[in-house]
Length: 68
Image (cartoon, rainbow, N blue to C red; front, side, top):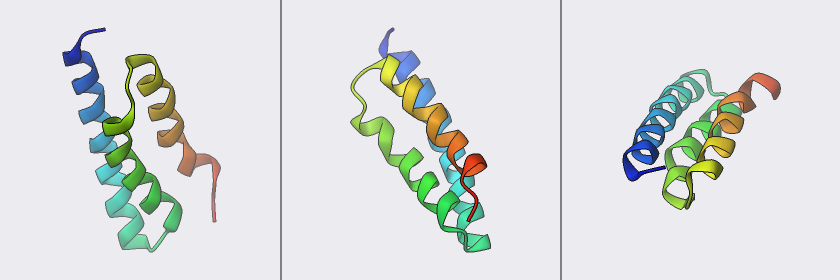
């Protein structure tokens, strides 16, 4: 894949991360808060497109499966 696809998915995951972060901060819920932070940061450290599409949806689904 080319760089524009990676950038588009990175922006999408970061946007979802902003939503999780704001929700976690207002509700004082640690799982959405830290998942949001992870969604902000992880695209900077993922070197290829396949790994980006494997880690991103897993992080997006994490607060759904882990309830504290």
